[in-house]
Amino acid sequence: MAKAKAMFVCQSCGATTTKWQGKCDSCGEWNTMAEETPRALPKGATGGKGGSKIAFVSLKGQSAAPPRRKMGISEFDRVCGGGLVAGSAILVGGDPGIGKSTLLLQACAGLTGASCAYITGEESIDQVRLRATRLGLEGAPVHLASATNVRDVVASLENMPALDVAVIDSIQTMYADTVDSAPGTVTQVRTCAHELIQVAKRRGFALFLVGHVTKEGTLAGPRVLEHMVDTVLYFEGDRGHQFRILRAVKNRFGPTDEIGVFEMTDLGLREVTNPSALFLAERRGNVSGSCVFAGIEGTRPVLVEIQALVAPTTFGTPRRAVVGWDMGRLNMVTAVLESRCGVAMGSNDIYLNVAGGLRIQEPAADLAVAAALLSALSSEPVPAEAVVFGEIGLSGEVRAVAQRDLRLKEAGKLGFKRAWAPKPSTAPDKRSAKPTSGEIAVKDIGHVQDIVSLFGIDATERTRSGH
Image (cartoon, rainbow, N blue to C red; front, side, top):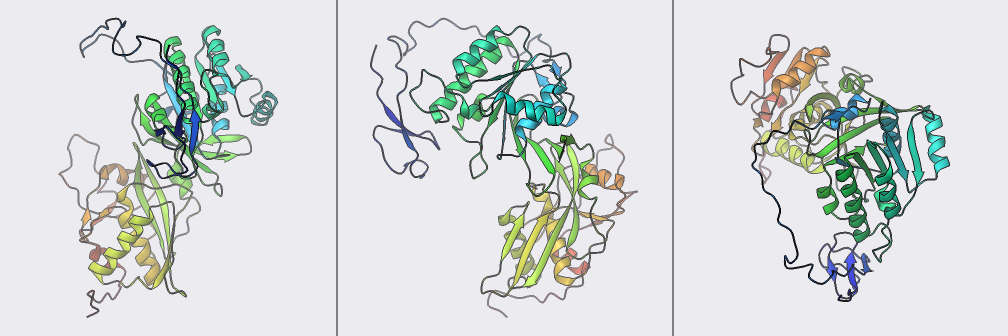
């Protein structure tokens, strides 16, 4: 057997070199190269020698859809695509202290008639028991253990009879004694995740892996970890708000970009069945700079309030501050308003906030942001009973967005009577739900200039030369 040669592996991107260096050539990170000794392959293990023939089948099969197990938390079941699938691996990531362990402990306690194993590597058993007592879950039938050796964990899961769900909190604390590197390194995380996923597939129980995140907000460890699992969930939220968002960014058994909304209380996380009403509960009408955006998160329509503040700057460079939206799109919207409509905004400080702690990612919020900015600039409030949505192009045109009727229907449920939206790209399907145009008066916005004129802003056309 050939002797394994030590390699230096980048702990950020997984790149390997034969000698140590201060900066990784692949990702540019400093002081991330760590020495690791991989396991040597036995003689004859490469080149396709000694392998057995695999069987091929057709795409059409007689197997039924995989059964799903309800967790007792409807928001969690929604994000997972309707429940847990046996043998699936789910990776849950989020900021420290956001509530990942609390959410999974409540999910395990909500499983009725199921055998659940909760293995913690970050806390002691007494600490988990204290959390369970605070949440009122001390009587839940959950098998609790504290371990970090993945060999012991796999052996224990193999010997547990009729296991349905297993939680590993967290994957960065697990280590394999066959790998010569510290816990949390790229090789350790990849090896431990592979061993745990294999036993879950073989035994047929659902596996939850809790993952740490980096300072950029992405999951720590190798990128291949997200490819190995079936579902990737991000648990996000602002510490200053009580709302938490469980977002699916990958799901082999359901839709992606689906969200579940929770509220953090003294007794744990409480699911929010109507997030639109909750996000707009503290909204004050007839206030300039406030606009209601009708968005879509996964398959669910969500109405949120977008707040803007425009004030003359006291510095040489105007300040731009954004919470809950993309800074690049804010700069694009302000540039379109100034170049295509002549609205002077370059000498003002701009502050933008999405109320409630929700982060909006779809471009349909462009028109709502523009309306909030124009309202703040002109001190003219957006009508309190109006919702706004639409995508803005660089030439100033307002493009149609998907699921227009669904957005209007959700707005009608909450009592809104008007909408500023682009024209639909295609004719409405007669087989779809009844249009809401009879309930909500929709004003078609074809260009940004149309919404500028609604606020009565005297926008003088200017060119780059100042003429």
